[in-house]
Each structure stands twice: as structure tokens, then as C-alpha cells.
Length: 529
Image (cartoon, rainbow, N blue to C red; front, side):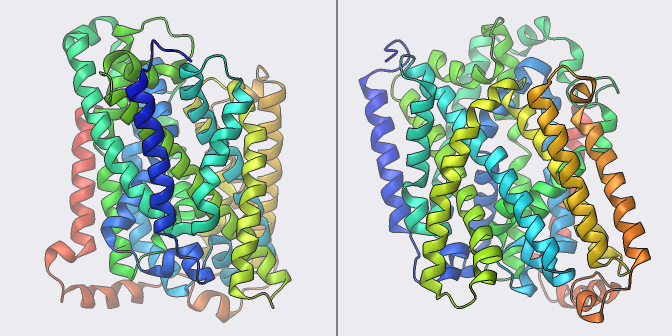
């Protein structure tokens, strides 16, 4: 154990907090039915929905990834954060009403309503692979980085297995209700801890002028040139929105939280609230990473920036509390991913293959699936070290998985002629191309294809899959009225909604709230352009 980093007080706080969170999660468990286990009974109000969305995204993985990328490349990593607010406005207007009114458990289930069962199965498979490769494995990796600094003599494999066990401790018996309630606590703790750490870091560097003295000007700019290795402006325009749309509007891991809302208004308010919470991330999660360049100019691994700030700047007690919060947030985020993935396996595969299973039997299937998934994620986790940084790994994998999925959702929502064959061939083609590119990245990281920026690869893959979707759809028969009547956008939806919104005060009108959110977002981007 590295006694220079933590003392007895910190270790005691970490242990007590983590054990307490497990019991808190179990206390809020809902296990009576599949709807309660997988969707928390569809009873959540907008503050819980919004904070849960935010906490699931701003976990220990993102905290470490944002600070690490800000340390090595500057604040351009914040482009993913403010873009989330824009995407969530679009999601609230166009897609969320269809998701909630359809009463689906999963996003692949929605695709079956719009297309057919083939699209449902393939999207479930893609999502499962993404959940294992992205969220669960990355969360385990982030947690292992922290604990490896505290316990340098313990093997990384053992640390990963311990974290995997902790993550599954309340997810398996408790379901999504346990996950959502623990996430609210994690979010509050991480926000408070991050604000304290930002203040302490700012004091230690002696002011922003000292940061600028050693930081190139382009590192504090959001809009970068086309050859920028982090976020080129072309990637910001064409690539980041694709990744954001997949993550916030199509990804089971995130959308499942909005599906827990008690009604459409609470779902919309919660989504917009999450978008608002994303905006201050620049000040207490990104900028500390840039400021750390003054304090730790020669770090070999940028992903250790946030733990280094915590261990070196905070006093005893606060170190233990913030590290406990990081690990618990990591555990909560992984738990949410595992619950989402087990929902996919149970509702998209097992329930269709064995329709006679009772609600309790479906829950048991979900629990067994969680055990298998966490073992697979633990096995993949060591591969993340082959990438430049944790955040680049996350965005690169999403950039390859997202485009075909976004194609079938957007075209399917706004183009009535799109049919099941078009969606199926677009999904499978995009999946095969992504699998090849990911394999090349792992096996030949220095090849020309592997070096091509993922924010340029994503829109190109989107274009290829769109062409496949349109050509195959036009070559086949038009979809039936059943497939488009309740699952495609019509202007009548907007006009009918306008009439109902007139009855609400302005502060409950999601359109007014959306405009305010977009204005605030624009101001921040303009200042740091």
C-alpha cells in the first residue's frame, strides 16, 4: 500500500462509503416484476431522471478522461460536453415522445416496431458489444488506475476483478431502481468534490496567468484547425454530433433512464436538466486538467492527472471521500451499463425465444446475464492500455459503432419510404466495417487506417451506411402503414403539441426551456471559441 497517498482516515472513509452505497442501493431495490427491475417501475420524476443521466455520463471514467485529455490536448475535449445539450434538445423534441408512447423496454425493441426483428437482434448485438467494450471495460480501467496508485504492489488483474465484483454487488439483486438512486448520491458527491478540487488547484497554480504562460494558446480554444489531433473543426461539425446522437438518443445505457420517467413532461424536463448540468463541466472537470500542466509537467500517462491532483492537493479525509466517490461512481456507472445490457439480453433475445417465461424468471435471466457480461468486460479491460488515452479510446470505439445506428434511427424517423431491408443491410454493413477497423487499431496501431481521425471516420461511415439504406429501401417494397403510422414524424404532431403547451406556464414549456438552454450553450462556446 502506498502510504504517501492515503492514510488510515482516507482508507476508513473509502471502505465505509463504498459499503454504505451497496446497502443504500439494495435498500432501493425493486424486484417484484420485470418492469420494476429493468425500468424502476416507470415512476421517476424529472430531477432524478436528469441527475441520473448526468451521473451515468459524468462517472469516474469521464472525470479521469476529461482531465487527462485536457492535460494533453487542451479544452477542446469540452466540445463533447456542450454538444450534449444541443443533442438533448433535439432528442426531447423529436425522439423521446415516440419512445415513451410506444412503451418499449429497449431501443432495439423500438427498431422492431419500425422495421423488423432482424434489426432488433442486430442492434441488440451491437449495443451489447458496445456496452462491454466502452462503458463497462472503461469504467473498470478507470477504477483500476486509481487503486493501482494506492496499492502499487497488487496486480492490475486482481484489482479489476475486485472492482467488477463490487459493481455487480447491488446491480444483480436490485435492478435499475438501485442504480438510479445511488447515481443521484454519486453525482452530488462528485460535483462537490470536483468544485473543491478546482478551487484548490487554481490556488496552487497561482492564477490563470501562470497556466497561460506554459500553455499554447490553441489549447484553450474550442474551435481547432482541420489537422488538429484532438477535435478538428470538421470533426466538430460532422463527427461529434453523430457520436452525441448515438450516446444520448439511441444508446440503451442512457435512454433507459429517460424511459423510467413517469410521463412525457418529466422525461423532457429531465433530459433538458441533464443538458444544463453538462455545461459547467468545463470549469470544474476540464480546466483542472489544463491547470495541472503547471503542477505536473512531465506525466507519462495523462489518465493519472485527476488522481494526481486528488492525492497531492487535498487534505486527509477529503482524499478518501473523493476517491470513494470516484470508485462508487465508477461502480454505479458500470452497474447501470450491466443492467442495460442484461435488459437487452432478457427482453430482446430470451423473451422472444422463450415467450412463456414469467416476470420473475425474466429477472433471473437478467441477473445471470449480468454475471457473464461483467466477466467479459473484465477480460477486455487490459486492452485499453493500447490506446493513447482513456477518453480517446471511448470516443474512437463510439465513433465506429454509432454511425450505422444513427442512420437507421434518423432515416427511419423522417423518411417513410425506409424499409426493413434497408435498415438491416445498413446495420450489418456498418457493424462489419467497424469490427474490421477496431481490430486494425488493436493489432496494427501504426497503420494508415488506424491513424485516420475517428471524427472523420464516423461521418464517412454514416454516409456509406446512408447510401446502403436508401438504395436497398428504394429497391424493395414500401413499409406497411403499421410500420410508419406511429413511428415516423408528422407535422401534425408539432401543431397538436403547440395547442397543448399553451395551457402550461412558460417555465413548464419544454420549448421555452430548450431555447434558454441553447442560448446559454452558445454564449459559453462563443467565449471560448
